[in-house]
Image (cartoon, rainbow, N blue to C red; front, top):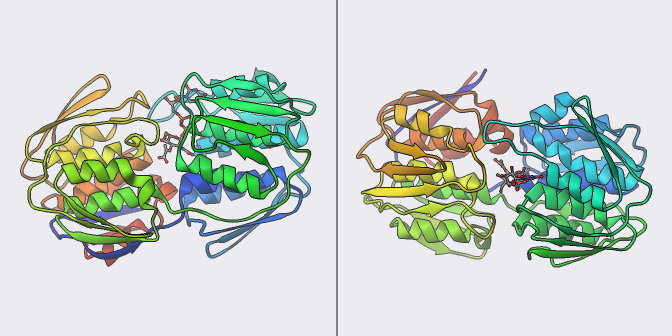
Length: 416
Ligand code: EPU
């Protein structure tokens, strides 16, 4: 299994081009199931989760062709309606096929994803919504079995803001008969990206990006040609790396509006940030000020940046409080950061982080994508050589991470 070895202490410098967004690409690629014909997506990141999605779509009978950052999907003849355990286990976002399959084929069988390292992550709200649209839902042998005639529009209220839940139901409702209103919908930029993609396919959707989305169902959708937006979490991770190493990095091909909450916190921590059109210049200073954060649905501070921010606070000048409100177990990086000398106390969903002058290198590993990214960040400032194991978590969500850091002057390598 690959590992990454990183030697701390070099300020990062230079430009980094941000790749397409994993969490926008997954639902957009899956939306191709809704139309008969060939959809084309560009700026698709080269990630394990994208490969898993291609495998899943192929398993369902779609033809998937990848050439560099372009993916073509022909979903004319779907031969299967099942997302098997082995594929869903590798990637929870596989549940996103549920809505499109029921809408298009009237039938879906999808393995229940179960818990994962960061929390229980139920899909009850996806199922409640599909039932409201008229699907019969059965849970049997670890699978969700959903069947329906043509789905019927409904008024659906989400108890909890859910990103993939909103996406699943938006895709299902696009082909339903009549009007669906999603209330307390997620407002993440990825939701807007999916809505724009569906609108290009011929869907009638209003309000994406707000908490109330209205979808007037249509009888059929067309294939689409779409470009994947830049990854805001990858962008945020490189911004953090610049501040943490007291470096100066310019992010290219990014969307500054999508990282507003992070920019605000990094400025409070003492960073200098200049915003361009599709670029952000970030400069770190010797003193890092301790700042509190609380994770929230967009436009609040993203849970997907919490682990990385904790590393920054680990070397800040005083004490900060980090509250995780989205997932119940998203502090798995804490024990590894403590092994690197961080001073962190966890009580429930709150971590109290006391800044220390230095972290020290260690052999570490994490069982989650963003936690693994935080360990690389810690390695970039720690004294000595840090060895980050289980790199496959990183490969799920960061394209060529070691090459991008290396081009920014870091001493980092992947060891097979
Ligand atoms: N929830 C329920 N019932 C549901 C659905 C969600 O109780 O039916 C709860 C979850 O347990 C959680 C909260 O609602 O406590 C929010 O979960 P959400 O459904 O929004 O998460 P998700 O859609 O499964 C997406 C991203 C995650 C990101 C979260 C939160 C994708 C493919 N994944 O997950 O990304 O952390 O939203 O922003 O879009 C990552 O990229 O590393 C990652 C984990």
